[in-house]
Image (cartoon, rainbow, N blue to C red; front, side, top):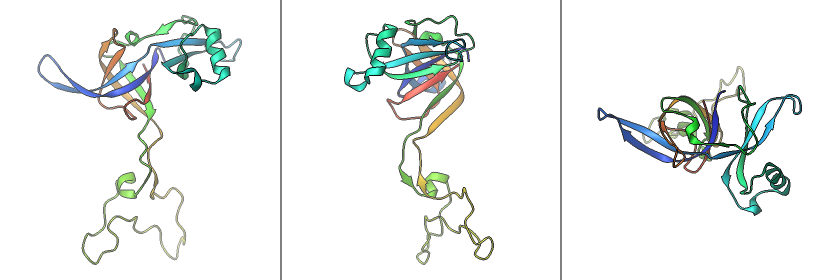
Amino acid sequence: MNKAILGKKLGMSQIFTADGSVIPVTVVEAGPCVITQVKTAAKEGYDAVQVAFGDTKDKNVSKPVTGHFKKAGVTQLKKHVREFRFDDCSKYQVGNVITADTFQEGDKVAVSGKSKGRGFTGVIQRWNFGRGPMSHGSGAHRIVGSLSAASSPSRVFKNKKMPGHYGNEQVTVKNLEVVRVDAERNLLLIKGGVPGPNGGLLVIKG
């Protein structure tokens, strides 16, 4: 991994190319991310860069984390802290800031985020099952249907697709293209959709 940044999903929009084509984009507030720690193989056992993103209030941060920020010289407390294992961590120092211009137009990125939570859902929404007969006599319009044979194996196999909790899980979409970079406003315009709701945390890796 050569570069990465934390960001917040702002929503979707569209831009027009020179030939008039429409490109759907997701607008992401990428950074600024301040480096709070640089881990080394000699001390921590592995090389990594720890970054923090998103201003927050004092009451939302524990005392140990507040002390960690103070040691790194971070005056404004941050909401999110993540680690990145770059190929070369030696060029980063505590206090440096990673901004949106780390990426360039045309870069291919992988975007990770938590998908929207949809609660307890049935098999049609959760697994894209087809519905049952819609005639008056049918009592199985949207239910699961047959689960297993009666005599053998006389049980329901594990991992059978059934109703249950849907969404609110980590999702990564790869090979998305950075269409535009607005360094002044810390914005990245990424082609297509990315996981999560508006305002959700995103991890963008290049």
